[in-house]
Image 1 (spheres, rainbow, N blue to C red):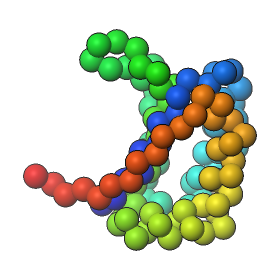
Image 2: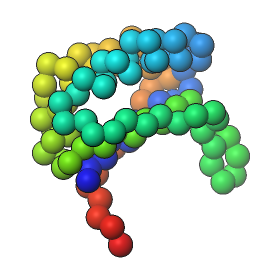
Image 3: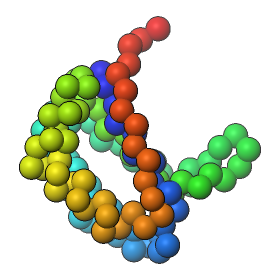
Length: 102
């Protein structure tokens, strides 16, 4: 299983971020070819030391890194990527990785 973790930093207007994210971005992202599962954080994103600089964390699940590449390279992936600029005013970090059970 491969994962995409998207970490959205605290936006200028959290309420506007949440509205756009849930009403526009999530439906776009759910159309990604090869997407198996899509989860988002609920409530504050914290660290062991306390609050973090992140507003929301999304985890997307795919079968492989190749499937991630294909999904994000599709028209749906390009539309989702272009949409990020419309609401992620605090910035965003994205990491991709494959996993195996230990």
